[in-house]
Image (cartoon, rainbow, N blue to C red):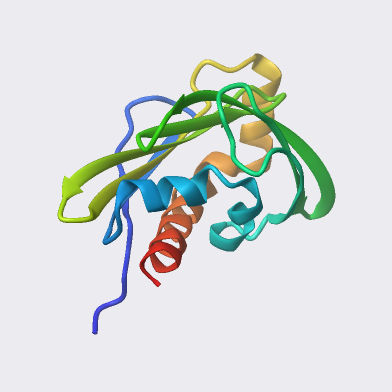
Length: 157
């Protein structure tokens, strides 16, 4: 049996990454997982999310949610949902201004293409410096692909 993999996409913009996978589940089921901040740690391919600290049970446009994170040292980050289209797209951002998006496309027969996008293209200079200093952009595609594989397993299981 072959290993499940997500496709890492070529992106033409600096500080941006994207990955895609097909999940054998309806868009509504996948979106419910993405819209639940308490579920994020269960499919985090970077292993940096430790738990959801606060936020609504289900995200919506303008919702704020906090996560306990750890990249070498523990910290807390508060995100704000900046785009929300039911069963199609959810995007959040935090104080560094880059965004994480999930875009869902219904392929029919309860099959969904999910694209995860990290966008740090038009962020402030300090945020660009931070991305470069931490090497996050170089690691993000692999972590995103891992997240999508874990999301697939969660939604198909």
